[in-house]
Image 1 (tube, one colour):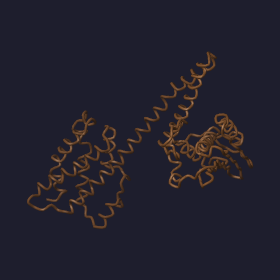
Image 2 (cartoon, rainbow, N blue to C red):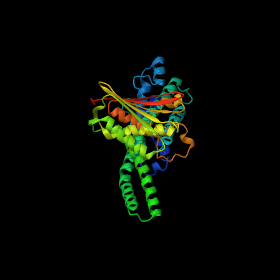
Image 3 (cartoon, rainbow, N blue to C red):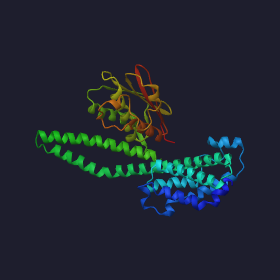
Image 4 (spheres, rainbow, N blue to C red):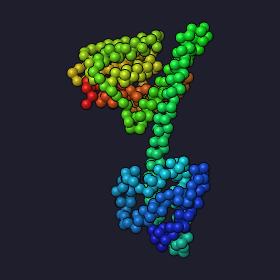
Length: 374
């Protein structure tokens, strides 16, 4: 008996075995009934049977095995993709999802071989069935991971939103305590609260921006006509006050007037300068150069120090990347490794670009911004 015929004929027995195994995948399966445990399984098996009945050359089989077939993994809706989505929503783990397909593969082949005895099973059917199960598993995992990532991003968004009110209450209260002049001990404690609240706010802001980017919303900008020289000079003054031990130089050349979001570009510059302060040689200045030409403005932030390794340089704007040495030090600067990622997203939101280059003596981050956002 050919495998496709067996699947269609013994569909109920196969589904019963699927359901029995799925019921063991706890705790997610505890509250699921027969319909939910069998979700999309029959449709998947009918698709597999139809695929087995479709003539296929060796070359077509080879291309399909390396995801070069007519239907690429993840390119269209399917019962397997729906199954992965529903299992993620139900609380299954990705290992439990994979276990379902492993059990299905073993169950179908074992039942079919028993039904074929004493005849020898068709080996080509076995190859094509394994290929079809692998395809379904890949589609399910793709859909599962997309749903898990969306759930995580939504959770981060809600967390960031709900934390703002209590954090604001802490910052306002600590500022009030500092203003009371109720003694040195109270003033010191209030100062610590203010600094800790500022670090928490910076972390929360980074988390919110990261979440927006991961949800595909991008960084929100509100461009107006500004003189970038004045706006960024103000940001550097604040950074000098926070880091009085470091020298921060500013050099301006040309016209820096244009249409940008002033607060976002202050955030971009702040992230780049803080990165330079943290990783640059402590006894050398951080240099900021701003140059305007006819259509663009360029911002260069440079620091002296050891070169960034090529592997690190290639992923330096990736989210949640930590700089050299971060994993081995007690980092109390309030950093999630999102600063450079957010800087790149702000540049992108202004239709600009950011790049970096590094050698044995200097590291430079360069931002190019069009004067008017298209």
